[in-house]
Image (tube, rainbow, N blue to C red; front, side, top):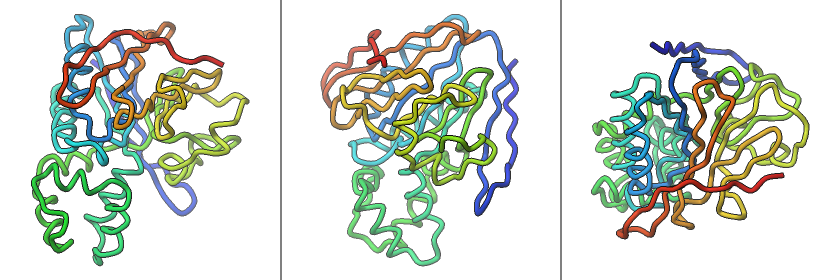
Length: 267
């Protein structure tokens, strides 16, 4: 059985949680940014549930905001984490915005920042009027099991060949010295860097221009802009991490969802 160990690694000005996933005889599915498209997420999870060899799922963050059903998306993830202890949720910058609001003593400023970045859809998915007092909104959200699943989140997952993060990493900085800000927010110089990293980095955060998964020599981008493109993408890694395939769930909200293999853009 897979063991997932968690450790706190101290780095300048912050600390982050990293899960080191011990290899086991089952496949890994990493899923890109969901952004409230619970229908697409549910279809992907149903597709892989039939995998007779078992699986672990790594959710790359930005589960919430913008789309119509962030609450259901969080519930689906909570159910997966409960059913498969090897599965992991990585926190994205949108989860950070929500948690910063929930944990702040003074709510007004972090609430406004969150609302300006897609949080209105998340609040409404919980059946809450976003015009209520922020303290009341925080109190209601904090009592829900769906919001509490964010407390179980990690910031990086590492296996033998891959490192899974939300946004990326800073080039020339060892994994143990990466900042939490970069793990959740970085774009450049990560995206344009063509050199090697310690491991292949699997990430989301920056939507691909093609709306398809993007594969580079040193990284894989799975953010295919689900909210805007109606496509949620994932990479399916074999247990030995030597072979892989890409798949996507596609379909507009309230329409039939199709899950099928897809081809990434490659450079």
